[in-house]
Length: 281
Image 1: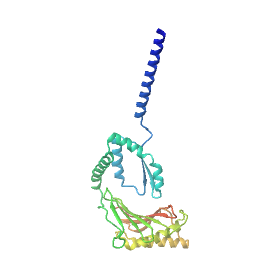
Image 2 (image 1 turned 90 degrees about the vertical axis):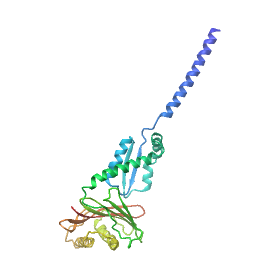
Image 3 (image 1 turned 60 degrees about the vertical axis):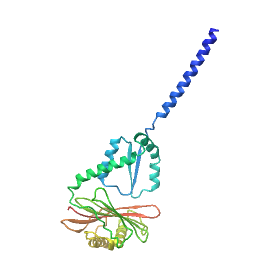
Image 4 (image 1 turned 30 degrees about the horizontal axis):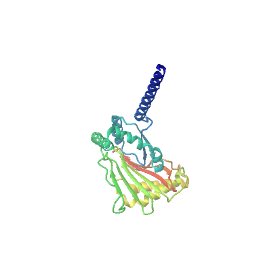
């Protein structure tokens, strides 16, 4: 009889122990967080002003958020962003549990406030005033101008009648810079054929010249570029090089242009970046 009682008690204790272990395992599973998750910020196109990232990264550190920024550049495709950011919703859910439903709104507000404070400190030393539109709306009515948070940077976007796209970025403090980013299907060649793309750059700039309002001597710049290309045809000068500085004014202050980048996009389109610079101011 005693043996039966002891056996029954042993079985009962074993069942209770197993039940408690299952409960503990369930609780442990519920509290485990996938530490490999983080906020992936895959950026397409132009970077915002550097001061913005200073503020952004500071608030990221303050909030102790796992974050990685990846620069896709102007040639990146939306599908690449989707691939890199596919796990963001999982991590954002964790951040919502930590900081509340409105965490992203409060986070961006703190970034904006810090960015404004840092900008106020830096603009006092900049000889340039706030950026103003360069593309004439009377010539290109669908142009959009956006003044960036540093007030020295302005970005204008425009779709031309032939389907080409232009992004014009003005920036700089000691130097005044105008960068033209053309997305075009009018031309096609090896991206290393700088002679070909020099001619293409000249053609694209002439197509929009009448709609530009800038203190830079654009007409002289285009004439100097054309002369350089003509010398190359006659083999009387060295060939045009990527990033080569072609002077068209100065020397005090100096004015020059560069063809900075040519890259192939999807759908048989190409991106050409040309920059005009003036300075030091």
